[in-house]
Image (cartoon, rainbow, N blue to C red; front, side, top):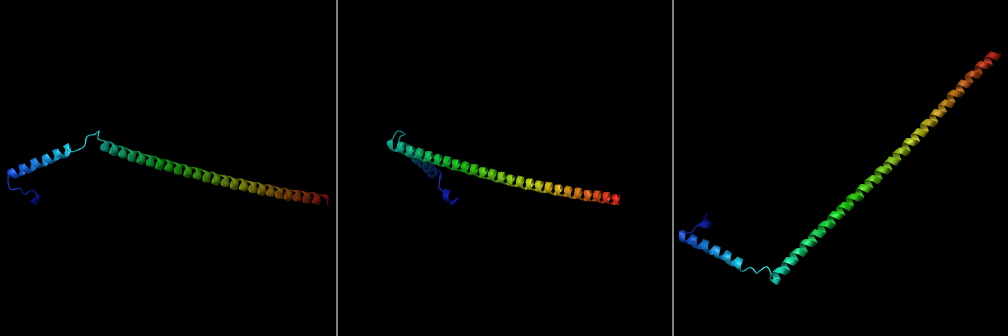
Length: 124
């Protein structure tokens, strides 16, 4: 508390009064609101605020565009993967059908061979 080491009550009261007087003088020394310099400063602050808001809108628009592009790319990639999967499944189904048809033909040939052998045996 060394900073508040005033010697007596009168010193503290004088210091308080002088501090209040300095604040009052500072407030009175402010230029009025219709002062051209104050108006120019206010306009400059408003222009800076508008520019800041515009940059924020541009960043938001860029972010939205990037998200939209990423979503579109993801959707295109998923569609390509789905098309590839459908093509694989169709190829597998085609191969399975070919294999089933080949097995059916082989079974029919074996059956026909047995039938022909039985007929040949019966004719002898």
